[in-house]
Length: 505
Image (cartoon, rainbow, N blue to C red; front, side, top):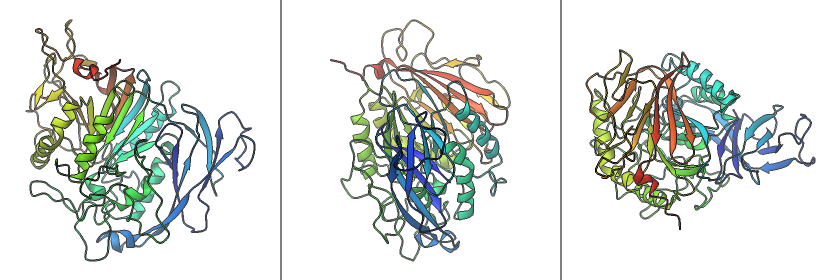
């Protein structure tokens, strides 16, 4: 169960794995590809580096409440960090105790014209033990493998925006899920956001520590926030996935011996005035021409919250000349289609909390899950499409488009005016919101009559493929898991207002 995640910059890579024995070393040996003879790596050999990490015990005693706290299990999780990597380079690596020689590509330094492809989705689940709940997961996993293995333009990054395994307190489902993603997650960074099925809980009577640092579960009166993790309260995710801290922030320290698994799984906490990252709940990272900001819709995002304070600071610090694209990853979407009444109410509250902030910093797009379908909005602000967006017609039973009838739809105007500006030169920025909660879990309904901001919807299993082409153009495609066909495609361009965020001297 080996998987990797980006470090604080392109010279680092986190490696995580599990063992059943407490005496296994937490070490990774690695070298640049092509510098060896294909033999297994040996620490101290010419060209071979060694990363020594740490391990910790995870068991049912670390869970918040039933049933997770009663499902007995014990495993040892290991973390090690590769350092001094050459950016954008191929490496071979091997975890201690394994005979498997694996490969990865190191991270990419910030650069405004860097082009790359990433995959994004939510709500996949386990394809083996929970296949009835997630009937689309097996096909999605197979397609993801093809994307990673592609000879031309392979995916270099995977983003899973919550509702990860749907283990719901069952450790065997977690193990099965991690086994399933290992062929891809051990080769390209597998970055995650927290969903309701990872975090939602009711506080138990025993001693427990919420890994987000919160004093208790987030349960606002207006939301459908319940005990969806079945007692996990985010511990399983926070301990299995080691996400990065931004380079300007302090490194997450390893837990002290004997520390409960949830005690410092997140680095931030909810103390008043605390604006540190709190991975995996809220954190950020750069990759080439893009800055990714990850937030938790399962925690408080109101303007008085520590998460909001961190989000405000993170967005303000982004260098749009170095990383012109700005993407926010979250589980629950800000814009929700009919008929999902309770989710629409949550989306309205999320917009009231953070849409103005995202708009102020000219976020280009968001990627969410939670609603078990695929849909995207027009470039939108305050429920209104920006100038130049072309409205169109409906297409069929499984597809709905509000753009043109072309299979490749452009999110801007075909006229000579700048994207986001009307004929009189009045410009406005809009954010394209992608909801991709259709990677595996049973699909949900999308009604035909929708708000004008809905640009496209597809009710089939799939995932998002995003091709970033320099500083101002991105092609987003929705790929069907069963057929492998592109079921929706849109070209997202930088608005005039976003381009103005780079103020070069």
